[in-house]
Image 1 (cartoon, protein in one colour):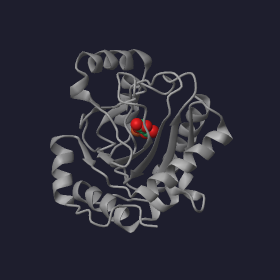
Image 2 (cartoon, helix red, strand yellow):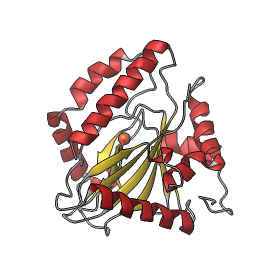
Image 3 (cartoon, protein in one colour):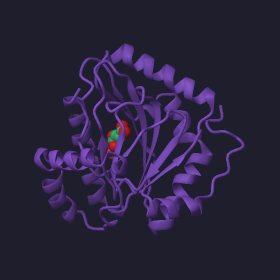
Length: 250
Ligand SMILES: O=C(O)CCC(=O)C(=O)O
Ligand SMILES: [Fe+2]
């Protein structure tokens, strides 16, 4: 199955410029209708397995025949992620595309919201699969674009994490967002593909109304910290912590 529209022209140089200048790039109607309805079916069956609540599936692309596996194997999308990453990072040391399916459903639509963070990857791509009707509580994506540089050293990140990824700082940032929502939020439309420098952009999502359905597939590509055995170990540990965090917040 082709995941993207055949007639779509992709200008990587322009995308890189826009990522640097505007922070977030939307490629409208990137996905084919077939791919989107496949992804929607996958989300529905994931909800049957997990229940109507907030949950994440780590590496859904490892399961054969899923829409996520089509995504991460798609040559066009892979080439896009590779070339934008290489434009800003000489040695992206990329492994495979790290992918996550994230679902907000059930009575508590605010679960997982306002949890602002930086991603570990150079580029993050977001495919919205289901989005609530456009309103104040429709889980818009929040981005504080390009707030930090790509760094080679991990220690600065650890310190920054302590300062920025805690409840108080996040609450403060939430107030900043609500003071000027147009500046920091982006309503997401299923079928579009959104790109931002995940490593450099402090981001998260606004809450959803109770009993909303919001589902996104996240793709993460490119590792700015090199690829020594030590760093591989740190990354593996980080993913474990991340998986536990995701489980806990379910
Ligand atoms: O679902 C979203 O809109 C963003 C989630 C996110 O940033 C992440 O899982 O790393
Ligand atoms: Fe993220």
